[in-house]
Amino acid sequence: MKPFSLLLGASLAVALTFLTLPIVAIFADVGPGQLLTSLGEDGALDALWLSLETSGIAVTIIVVVGTPAAYLLATRRFRGRSLVVTLIELPLVLPPAVAGIGLLAAVGPSGILGGTVEDAGLRLVFAKAGVIVAITFVSAPFYLRQAEAAFGALDRTWLEASRTLGASEAATFARIAIPAAMPGLIAGLALAWGRALGEFGATLMFAGALRGVTQTAPLAIYERFSTDFTGALALSAVLVATSAAILLTVKLATTHSRVAAA
Image (tube, rainbow, N blue to C red):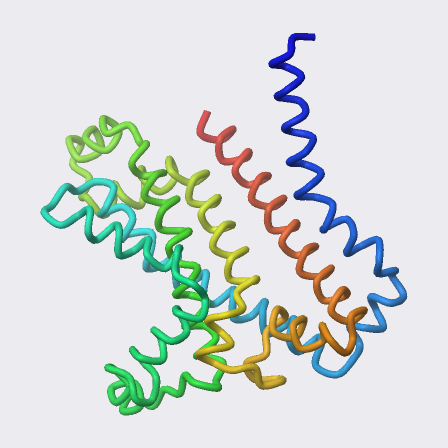
């Protein structure tokens, strides 16, 4: 075997070991009995359900708003577009604590839009709605980037042919662009959902960690870390399994979409 091939194989082996060993260790340290016992402890299932509920709502909002926004960015060229894209991507590199502080400064009780939020009857700080806002803020760029790339990779002649045949731009978007870009959109959804499930810092800073109210699974893991390591491992195992299920579902859905398109 050639030296370069050996180098490639060794690099893959090192990366695979480094990335999978911690995940394997979680399940190796927690047996099925311990897992069920830990999940039955006070607050564990509430935190897990809250994570699933809020991340599901956040991803729904992201897809509904982000899909047409990504299509606009992919199909239009306008002055300031690069700045708009940069601002959309900025939350990707913000430290979680900064994201939380920014949300407080923007829509917190004393924030720029705090009065407007209160007048609308919305309570965000120390409330479930605040959790949704926080995870939407940090997760949306993952979907928007992937969706923009998916729409940008479409063959423009398909869109032009649809318009030539008399379809409106809205009909072309719904009937041609979205189905053709579906594999990329599904991949973006998976990235955003995975990020939403694992969100920690911005949620803690903005919405707090009240049990049964704003304490998501990552926050519950942190709370149990120093006093109940087995419980922390159990919740971690559930999140790993949930994330793996999302990835598997996305891969199957993407494969199905590509086969159908072919």
